[in-house]
Image (cartoon, rainbow, N blue to C red):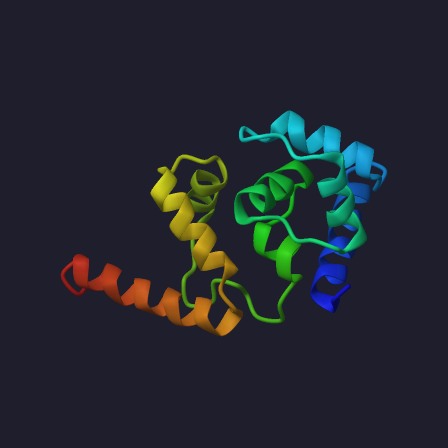
Length: 140
């Protein structure tokens, strides 16, 4: 079991317990499949996530994060010392819009890809987006 998977398992257990759920594979299996719109995952998959044997794919990570009220990047990678979007600040209305899934599937994929980047690359991508936004507004 590698450290990355083990650390994820610890964060997943903590997120479940913080929401009042026992960190048991059966509980996770039931909760996840009740929310996931794709093909159901097997009990053994939920067990592997909790034992630190496997990591969920991005679409499944998104559902887990929503289930337990955490940011996907924090669930997957833990909290970073730096803000994940430093240089790319969103106001509360924009955050609510993204979290409420008021974005297209391609936008959601771009956001998820952005959030999966290491902190330094997220910072660079955020700076690039700010520059593009200014250019689109005529340099204002």
